[in-house]
View 1 (cartoon, rainbow, N blue to C red):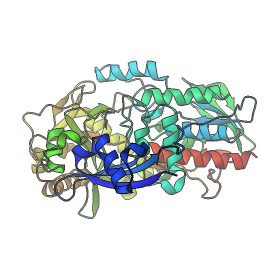
View 2 (cartoon, helix red, strand yellow):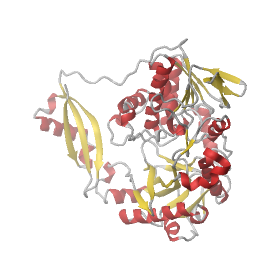
View 3 (cartoon, rainbow, N blue to C red):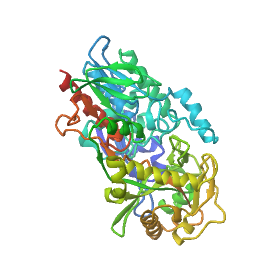
View 4 (cartoon, rainbow, N blue to C red):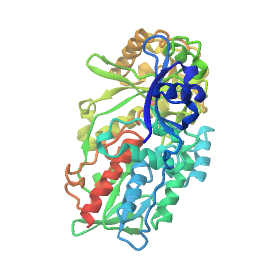
Length: 517
């Protein structure tokens, strides 16, 4: 059996495999010549007490000891088995499909968007201020919003399912084994597309189907039980339907609402993207350490209460860039991501405040349970009106935003379509802009240098989660009034991020198995 050693090292020492191998051998009282393999099982950076330290947990294998086998999965053939329709090819839908295969059911994944390669061309067109295809963009297509996301794999949902298995599944499909031991695992926007494609290939090789270009227009219901979905005049049948459509599929919520299927308004969060030079964030977080070259691009996690309303950073992207995340041309929506090397000169993060159901209650008489969607769309359209042409986004220097004054110029940003000066504090709802301004001021006091003329806020970051929940029974995970319908993932209101959505998709697949069998 391997022995485990924990070391606290300087960044330079932790970057030297020979050094930490020798230190591990000395700690165990053995010769380094007897060490067959040293495997990192956990790595984290601690910069809280001045000089940064890197904590390494290592598994040490000595000669003649069996070494760990590479991650591997064998998926059985489900050709000809009971079909289950999975709506949406994002993390929740794809992991639900993989689990269905493991359970002997045949998934039919139905995705409104395109495969990765043609989707890349559509995303590139958006970045060039071209047309926004409502079915093929940063939110819709093979892999959903996860494909072109930052690929951060942190989750607080470990109790929902097998977190390590989810990471191993990604490694099996092409992710770096480093995600198995990093404290904050990250794949990278440059590597995610081929991993998603590999997952879809696994589904098809096992006898399942992945159908692209199929927008759902209705549920196929017989005698009160869902028997499939409708794509225009085409009906795709299955023993159950897993609804994993993501948080931007407004038309799905409208379809369910129009069909009289119960929905629930829920709180969400909304705000801006804030971007700094990455070198500034490194200097703040690593306290100008002389060994910063051996450390990853620094990140931060911030939270405060401002006037009784929470303000917090969200989806922080060190060494990353901002992207246009709208799903139609009437909106201005921004998001962030990082490549695997996190080597961009910029650091960006969502900076959002909580939106309560009471905040959009005034829209309930007109929109009912979809009032949150209407509220979100109002702000996204206001951002579009106050931005530039096409995807050019409204922006303001962080210091001007906090002080309540206009920006006569803007610093360089990573947002490829471009930005234009705008008084975000004037056209955003007052309670939103007030909370954000106070929050940024608070964060500036906690992180000296955070509030600076070099920082810019860009609008709007509005797709943190859905303002609508599709209800489900706590025991069966089925919609309480529609037999055979299983909502899952971010779009249903039960997850937030790649891994939590994946785990929820697996749970729902297990519930479907119990229902079908």
